[in-house]
Length: 409
Image 1 (cartoon, rainbow, N blue to C red):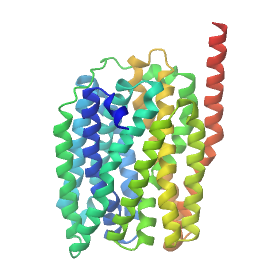
Image 2: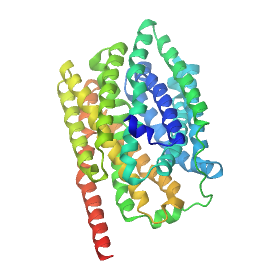
Image 3: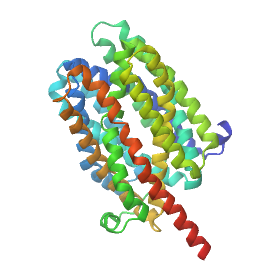
Image 4: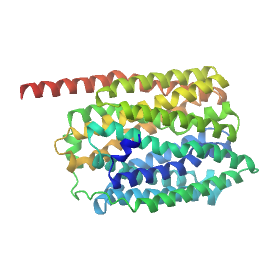
């Protein structure tokens, strides 16, 4: 991995360092944020509404953030993202015990932070990498983003367990704010590239690349899972089985170690030709391990899930992101239109997240509080498995079409 990292430009190295620092700050609090919100009402409703509010905010904020990126640069929006992530945690620190009454504000702030940050992230990936090396870059970025997660969860777990009540959470959230500020300072070393001020939004809506048009239903389905499963279900089911913040921290540290090893192997042997196969293996593995821990919520199942899920999750998400970036690049004028593609991506993804939250809230009427978590944990990742034939149809035909075109030429 060192040789791969060494081959990157100085600007790209600072970009990766910035994300590593941000990843450490996020890892300090992300898993415990869900537990913190759950403890405020001891149901999953507050978590679901929080996810709903930031999902709605992203749909509306992404266009605004893109406008800011055009007026300044995508790197500026990423820096502003760090600022609003910091504000999100300050809201939790300021309102703490009464946070349930301000959950809408918290969700809107987090949605704006995510919109600002990910406009910058997606544009940086498109600008700093090419399709043939993108999988490798995404895996290396994943390693650096995850390294912070090795120490951070167990450190947070120790801190929280040393204090009575919720005081430990406040200490951890302050630490997160500090690392977000350091990430902001590091980002000043990354200039980024300016983009055209002209918008091609409606042109992309009407005349996108053929692959992109077919990816809409995929992005919608992906949002259904990520809005619930990836947001809080994983944290809550592992917290329930682990039994406490310290054990949850130890568990997540072990999971991050597995994730780093996975990223390393996948970065070394990654190839765009294997994206579909890697996605399929990851999706099926994630679903089966989720069913196992739902049916048998015991320590051995948690260990198996802790080994399988980081491998499967990384295979799934990295391949999906790489396919989305490739679909954008299929447009002959993608360099002028890439920001508009990124904005439009959030529409089906955001709608999917909202659908996922409403499905989860609807399930409360049919299952009691003890059944709701394991049943929903089994059902949502199955959506990834359903997506495999559609992805195969999109990209297999795309590759065949490209081969035919090159043969004719």
